Length: 181
Image 1: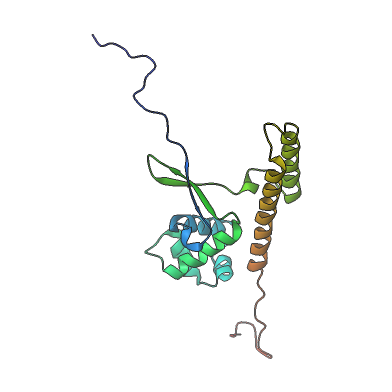
Image 2: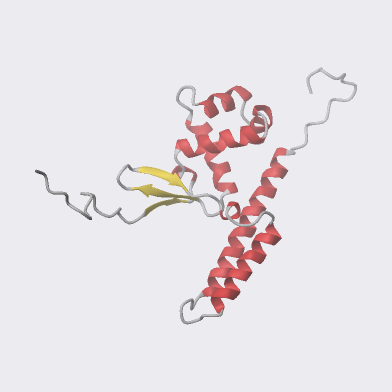
């Protein structure tokens, strides 16, 4: 007869979290750049994203769908755009047993919507922490850093909106619609 062992599953505790971090375009994995490009194409169109990054629609489509091996310049364009819209850079928690990085979301995505509401929320958290300076000695510095990060994320979104509204070249004088510019 087998003896039942109670309280032991045979597994040890999970290992501590390890983070991957990078602020250069080379630090952004191709899969993350591809996922970001797919998200942009989902929110906009292939044509609009192609205009934003100065690539052809077909290149954007192939990169987004994972068709073939992407050119280094294509990866670079999307990785730079990712870094531009994520001011903290690329940060991912590496799942040690499996080695698969899980990308951490932008700070603004876990705070209330809107820059002013998010900053107010951070200020309220700081006020709560300042109420107990013994447990939270650097609450004011953390609050300033979080507010700066939130502002930078919203500023990056504003730059992205400006980039997609890039004005078209004017037509040549006397050129009819449909003729080359």
